[in-house]
Length: 124
Image (cartoon, rainbow, N blue to C red; front, side, top):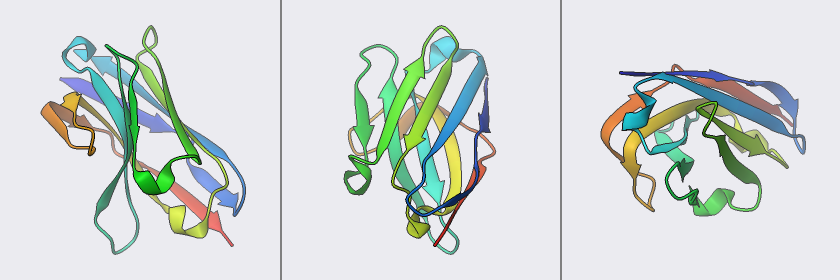
């Protein structure tokens, strides 16, 4: 099992920045990919981005490229999501995910784990 704990959510004004963190513990060696998925009120979950431990390759939702950046600290088993130029439509619960792997289209596969989520609210 892998446990994921997110932090860093909160309220920010439009145009501002926020950095989310996700710390993984447990059998982290079983997961190569870590990343973020978000769910806005009344909408389906949406892939945000992911990064692989083995290659360092990062994948993003096309709509978020240029504003969001994912990074990871392998030694600390932590992944970060730097969000800049935030918009009210970025308001959502952001979930950390870890999986055996992730496709370029953002589908985590294999053994997949989820955090409980952290709320990001962007005010206009």
